Image (tube, rainbow, N blue to C red; front, side, top):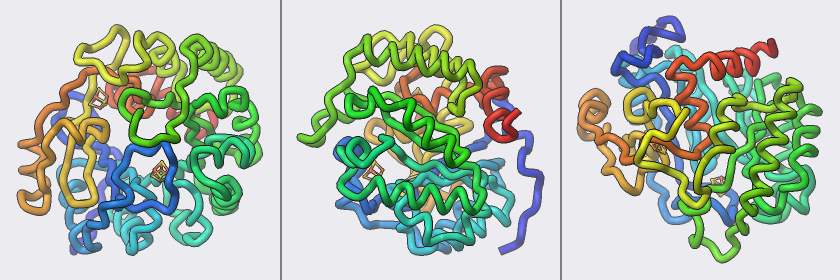
Length: 337
Ligand code: SF4
Ligand code: SF4
């Protein structure tokens, strides 16, 4: 396949140009953990694209304008050809990020240096807290992964889902982040979307307690703490009306225009695309394998929601809408301005 070298940011980043810019690729549904609040089908679906199929789709996405690739799962390091796929995507011109639970990170030292950023889930600053919903031994392994990433010098994010288990520990998680020069991003637990799928599902944080934590996170952020997501995103989370509903069919006040399905695409492990990970159960996927990326993108349905509580999507949508706050936050995270 022809090597394709173009600048990392093209015109496709502009919000009014209908081209995808970010591809979130869930390379596998498999996972080596069984977190009780996980919303994936990670234990029953082993179907994955071959390296040839996956690299062909990435090539087509790149040709269409995409420049940012976020590899996820399941646990993406379980995908057999993950190292080759990262190398291929970087050579093509993508900036590649990867979301992991950290366990297999030490086994991939070479490709770590190719990543634009690595996000590792960390729900506590101690085994007692982190392992409560993620399983015994997962904290120690996550820390080993964080250490390996730190040694490799990859820009590191720690992703913490706020639950009643870690409500009093989020500052200690920031300390863990500082130790490894990592930014920490805090997200709410998406109660309504996930609840009921496991008897071990965490109890939701009481609303006022949750809002107090978000207010404290905003204060800490103002002190230029090592917190990712812009202040504007945390304020939108703070002002969300009903935490039991994670999406809204209206565009809520202050929320960015949702560009999922237009600038951001979710590609699943079968080669189907959706506007957003959140709506894969509501919107019919379009098969890039059968139709090719260009046609699948053209025919994809719009999402049923216009605003949501999904912190990473609020931040990405704000960035793609060229919001000053999110651009400043992004530049700070990359260059520690
Ligand atoms: S590590 Fe992530 S994908 Fe795996 S079970 Fe936990 S939440 Fe789900
Ligand atoms: S509003 Fe949020 S959940 Fe809905 S499609 Fe957009 S990004 Fe996804």
